Length: 575
Image 1 (cartoon, rainbow, N blue to C red):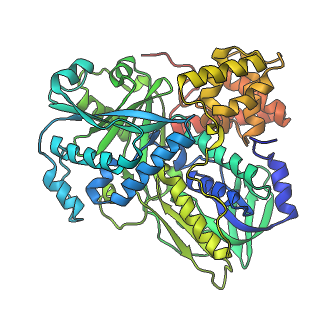
Image 2 (spheres, helix red, strand yellow):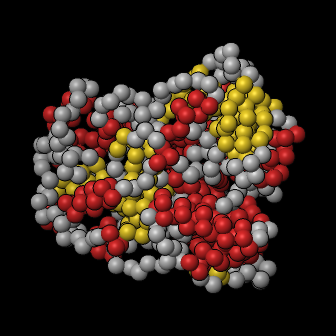
Image 3 (cartoon, rainbow, N blue to C red):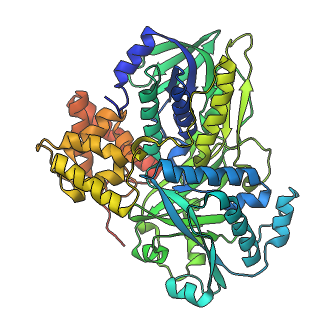
């Protein structure tokens, strides 16, 4: 059936029957998933594996922004900004169910500061102590932004707002500001779901394309790669013509498992807070506020699914497995937002969750993290005596540019195989973005038609449209037999909807569902009762014993506490 990942056991059996594969992608984050989809579109037999769940590393920890990278202009990365803006616009078209315009306000506190340090950064002379960017520097950057999108303008040009009007709109902003500037980028509601949808697309494009989570790289010898099933402990062997290392911050570790000693990644950690604060939401007014910290870094606060998302940090890290949002990072993020909004009452009690990820940036020595390029690059480790296949390493990049990065690597691989590209991805909708009704009128017609077909209430169908795009038709068809009912402990979801996610979207563990296929846990909506209710649904579909269900609940509680500071999964009250 279209619109679904193949059942995990079916996929594993297919690999056992035919271990030869043209391309093995190790890493199911956004870069790996984008490449998987593009290769499958060309008819390439490709296998993607991830040691954890799909999109569970850095790709699950972005600031929920799809953006051109205004700050990159200071480092002269004009091509990257132009490329990012182009792909931002393509995502607004191809993933309109998740990617939407985001007005962004920049509070400005001086007219000319930051010019000297910006020139030094542009000339790669080092910026010294960061200085706040004044109105002149912001105006210059936003003018370039407008110029780069002149031929494909989808959103309004930037504008400046007076001090009086700015404070009238947002009275909690610091009274020291002189202007605000407003420009447009985009936000993404469900990045993890968009990643999974690309895997679903890939399997639909090519019957020989397969994606399997919880399958880890153990090593390689000759023409063979050893993989371990993290759920059963079984070992599998595959024989790829090419291996693509798309493990992000783990690239050097994965290369080491293959016998290659490399130093390609210089990761930096970004931590975020999800906050339940009514005054902050009112100040945001449905927009993002892009502000500077006292040490000259940039930070953001934006609305996300009814909560406020605040971040982030930029700290060099060595071990990606040990990344957590630490106490001093919470202090830093809260302190930074109090600087720009001194009247805001915000504290730790309003934090419903945290998340952190490692940006897999190209190794750049020991300089300041802010100077590490966000550009992408594919490095090739050639075959040797121990490993008889090349290893293509996907270094750097960011969420916005995954499509163009995947396209560049696909072109190189097609050349390697002596094949030609069948189709491009520029105008190819992703998952539920296909035939998505963009206007209010089109949505009313779409909802009305689906209501006639399923008899589900239109408000329920609208929720499904927001969550799944036009894949909501597939979900609604399964819920329309009259037996579906809301969850007892979360009326926003139904039992049938949870069953659909588990059966069709590669859910192996409870946290896959609560953190990545939905945002229930990160939004602070998870209670102990809801956790048990959803665990019972998973257990019933997977035929788990009571003991196995209890172990799954304990495992999930530990992940929530350890990685997201959700000590006890109880419903939190609004501030």
